[in-house]
Image (tube, rainbow over all chains, first blue to last red):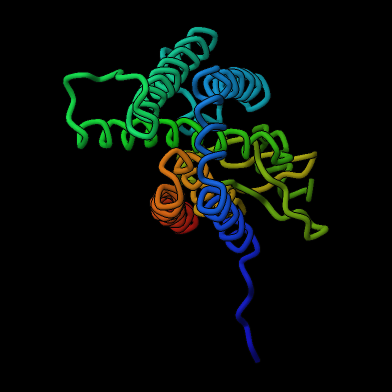
Length: 168
Length: 102
């Protein structure tokens, strides 16, 4: 009997990445121009910032305080402060990364504006990689938190042995 | 990782608490017995399972960000994203095993 199952989510991921690769290969100029517009007009930055605020605030309201598995970067114990500081940290990281990515991308692939005049080509490529990694980190973390929001979790309360023995 | 109990009707009930082990869960709840939707369970009846697959989503995020580097960027971003996601999945698997052994 064949017990091998197809991992649907991996297949979908493979297809999506293939579509991205095809788009950027067959339509490189248009893709680059669109990315430039997205970065220069701050669409990516705005989308990430809105996502961060919505997800962190919703998560802090909906998921019980007991369930604290690394949601907040800073844990002072006072929830509103934790939410504020966590939002601030994620926003600072992602907006800086978007700005660095914009500068490195425009300088390396268009060359009409020189953002980093004293940097060598390698430095700018590394900058692009690091900025991408930071954005990946923030987006992936938000995806994880959003995933926790969609689970339909039941509320837990303490009980005692008598209730257990009575079959309740 | 998510924690669950199996109800008498064989339905899994996800819990809104998070703990790395059963003793930690007991300490969080304040009792070795917990009530979920009116039914009382012992902490030994709580098990952990995988919450969500990280690798596919991570690969897609990596691929999308890699668009700034053209076709090679998408492939490299997708591959690195999948690697990181796979690593996160492995760590989660270890946490699940540790909880279920505790």
